[in-house]
Length: 272
Image (cartoon, rainbow, N blue to C red; front, side):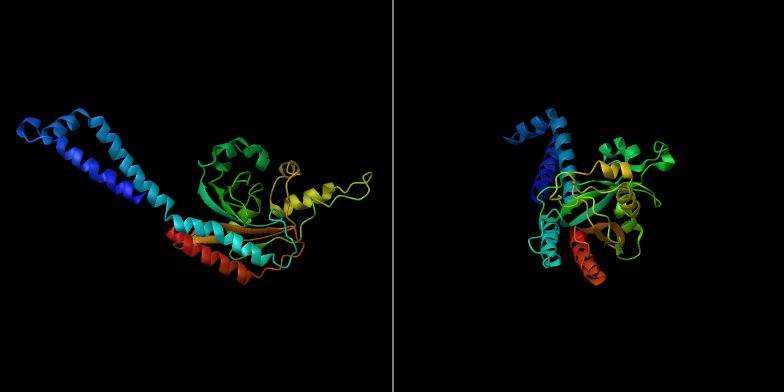
């Protein structure tokens, strides 16, 4: 990206310089032809200039490729260590996810679901709008970020923000108590299948700060039994959240381990 940026910038500078000259003052070929061509193609020069600026902005926003690669690979390494005591731990039942707090306009689809996600009849009022969204950037053992939920970020605690919103405002590591099991193992007796009760859904929604109706429509997805998270910083400012979720009832993870992981990721994020 940096090579493309420099090449485009130099090319634009040369073309702009030649466009400002008078072709008849130069008899040496191909200089006079280049000057005449550049004067006819000023629109092209403008497009190339725009491309050069865009390339620069993109490079600054994307950051070094090695940094983002490391950010996406570190959760895999930590997952294998944190859940090593659980034999054959399925990747989708014991996860580490990194969320970045982004602008409120970065998730158009989320606005369509805001009423359902928050259960707030006044969701359309400006004072009730989210100030941003938590965008999933990386999840352990997952190649893509498909089907990972975005969560709204509000300026104050509010239902619908999810566990992530609570972590965002917490001073230190934040945890939930053991949550009800919304995905019980199949009962050997098909006539009496295990199902979570209404009280289970109500308690789960309350402790994870989501709307019960939204939680119920996730019945085919994996729901964690324990959650732990910590906010992440970039250059001394809040940047995002790291969340560890597990189907295990007892997540054997200390606050120091979580803080160390977040600090290590924060150093990479500062380079990205």
